[in-house]
Length: 126
Image (cartoon, helix red, strand yellow):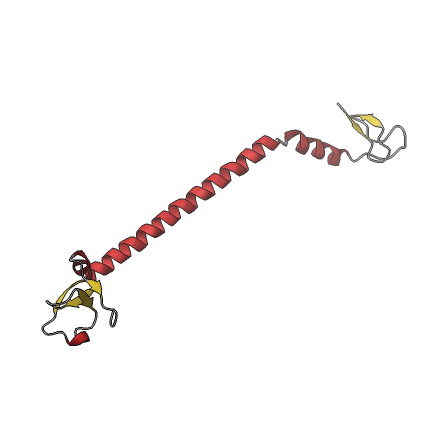
């Protein structure tokens, strides 16, 4: 294997410390490291590694978003099971305020049950 002089471009043998044409001292360490780095550079492997990182990153984001969505859904479900609302016998709406709409003897139930029973939220208080 050979290399070219960095000054004049003359082809030199690997063991040359000086150019046989112009006398320029050759920096062997620099040349060897450049040859070594470029000889091991494989664009397909770099592209493959980059693509793999993109896939892993996208997977992590997808899982994270799915977990966040599930967490929000679980929170809403838990809140609906715990939140209490008020209903009246003669109405099809539920209230967050038992004094809203002058209800007589309102019954307190969970928001989840009110929604299951077909009650709609009151436009004044909920």
